[in-house]
Image 1 (cartoon, helix red, strand yellow):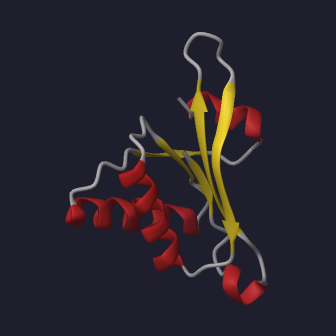
Image 2: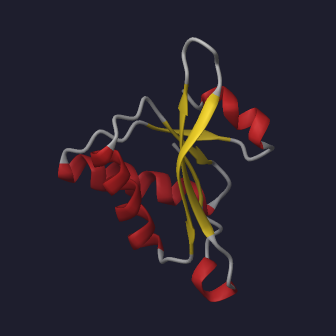
Image 3: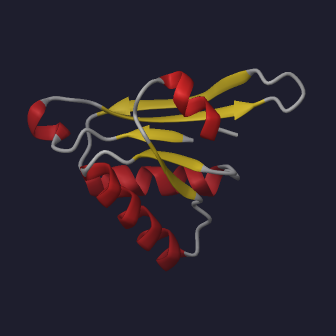
Length: 105
């Protein structure tokens, strides 16, 4: 699972994205299972990610480590612990999709 939250998205008109990807361990082909691209507040964004965590068993969650996203990561970890939800988040640089593929399993 990967997500991007541009910070003040609701006020600026930017979208945030949650993309769920599965990788075939035999072929290495990656499949997009879900793509949730919309405007929402940070609280709703974190809750949406937690909902996905309850629906699927993730091996990891890639989160951009650019400024504001680090706060989202911490909030996700805090709320996941409170609710006893498995949310294996790790930071990654937002350089390109090809760089991100290394952390999506």
